[in-house]
Image (cartoon, rainbow, N blue to C red; front, side, top):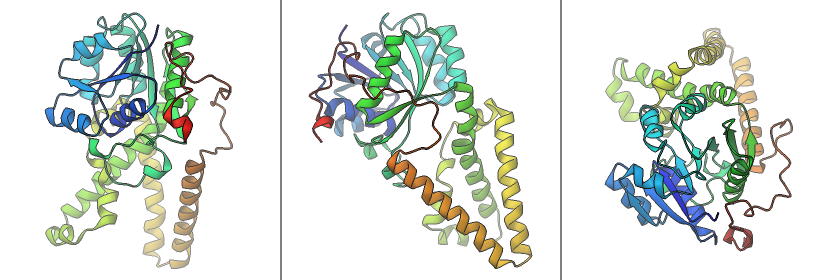
Length: 325
């Protein structure tokens, strides 16, 4: 069975980048985008992320050989319920929505056909600090030299899993398998926690005396530090795993207490050492991300010899534009 149509439900920077990468390959795929907002659909067409768009979720599901989903937490259940019996028997469902544990539960309840895999392609190091999240900021190489997190359902056919691996490789990303609940717990630390801390920082400033002047003077540092509060998913995801969220909040509060004590004591030397250590660790992290070089990986399968396109429902990737770079 050859893949002919990839449908993307939920158009944003991430999914539009996937659409661009697929369309820039020589696999001959058609990409159909689904968006509630006409503006999002138009932007996706303008940048070449999709061939066409539709506002009809059922049509997007029925047409797809590969169905990529990225919806807000509040829309997740109804989306899976609607598509549950509409997809084809062979359809690979790649769910990029926030909570992987919740996604697997909903898939077990609603997905009657197809092969469900929770997934998350991770931004390449070069795009970590561009500060842009709109569809217009999508790039075909957004995930180049990064990883593609995969969390298949127990019912997913091994060939569907291999197809998902190959899809990640087309994006330039290395597959990384892990438990969905472990993934959710970890993501509370690197996604939910920044959102909560950013919200706390903004509230502290906006409720202070003279806050209008403070916000008038606030610049890049403040904008980047509070950038992650712009998400409707923070509250429900934070409460979805309260224990994990509380552990991360307690850890962050403990670090803030250390810094508060050093400031109170006027200990510039020790405070500088703490900040220098953080700076070094951050540079090390960015360097490892840029090289995609991790020394302690146990979840990376040995897939170096996989023929990238052989299992992509019949398509071969040998003539892909990425291969010619």
